Image (cartoon, rainbow, N blue to C red; front, top):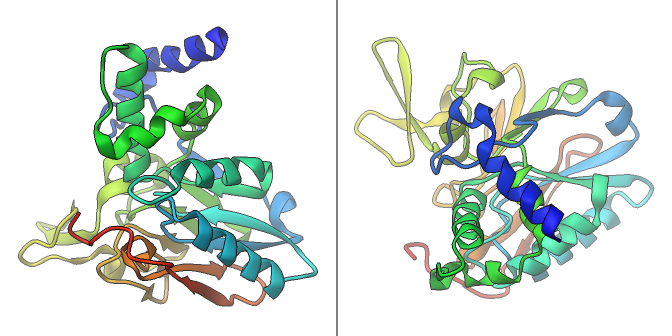
Length: 273
């Protein structure tokens, strides 16, 4: 345990964190942009799931639906981030995803970053008291924390020509040059002076970022429950607000390309909370 704690805290000293900073100046994952080779995915059905936010019961139901839809294939589950926080069973969601090993991948979302900020504060200062909305994180193991720290910002599957990201991608900028904060927080883009200017909130003259995305890769993303399901030629937004009493949605990125959803058991949080 002591070795794990040292390893976790030593991440704070990585020099590369000064490059492409994230919002909270957290340690960057070893692999910020994960690329998955065809030999790993070619015989699997890939099911991409929207923002879970600790909605464990709905996640289990949706995963069972996916397995029933593709009974003859191994399913590789991918998540668009915000797997934890705000909802009822964040620890259970994290345990479930980690238990799947290399049959599940997730990108880092803004809520993973917010939780990481708090648990690192707590680990570095034993007198620090986690705010009420983050106290569930007191139950995380060192392995859980290390898992969250190493979530990549993007997942790219070149053989299937798609990218998974939490929030959005600036058009015309390569993945390795994207700003980490944009990848977890942007919802809108304003195009001014021949430049894309991202923002988390709608500004005068701005539009949802995915309207500007012209491929060639298809992007699966979340982070925008207010707009719900977004179906565009080169982008699919999967945040359908399960946390807020909506639905948890997933889609097969290959094979049947079927879209599945389950209704939230209840409204866990009001949208403005």
